Length: 116
Ligand code: 5GP
Image (cartoon, rainbow, N blue to C red; front, side):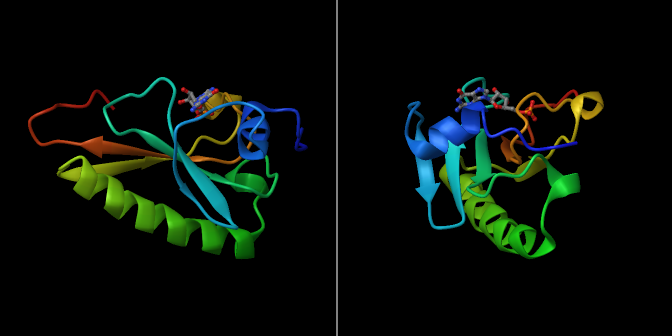
C-alpha cells in the first residue's frame, strides 16, 4: 500500500486546514480529534508522510513514540484521567479512515465504562 499525500492531516500539518493544535515540534503535531470519543481525545501525527504503522520507518517511529508518551502523560494530567487508551489503526479492516499515520490518545476515567 502506498502513501497518498492528498489527505487531511497533510493539509493540517501544512496549515491549510485549521486545527486545535496542542503540541508541535520538528517530528510531529498533536491536535484535538474533531470527533472525540471522550473529552481530551487527541491525535499525535508525525510530519513525515507515512501511510500507517505497517509502513513506518522504525527510526522515525521511535521518535514519534517518545512524543506519544510525553503527550499522553500531559493529557492524563490535564484531563485528571485515571488512564490513557492508545489506539492506532492500520488499514480499513482495522478502522483506519485517514491514511496518514496517527495515534489516538483517549483519556479514561474509572467511573466511565468504555465499550471497547
Ligand atoms: P482513524 O479512523 O483513521 O483511526 O482516525 C482518524 C481520526 O481523525 C478520527 O478520529 C477523526 O475524527 C479524525 N479526523 C478526521 N478529520 C479530521 C479533521 O479534519 N480534523 C481533526 N482534528 N480530526 C479529524
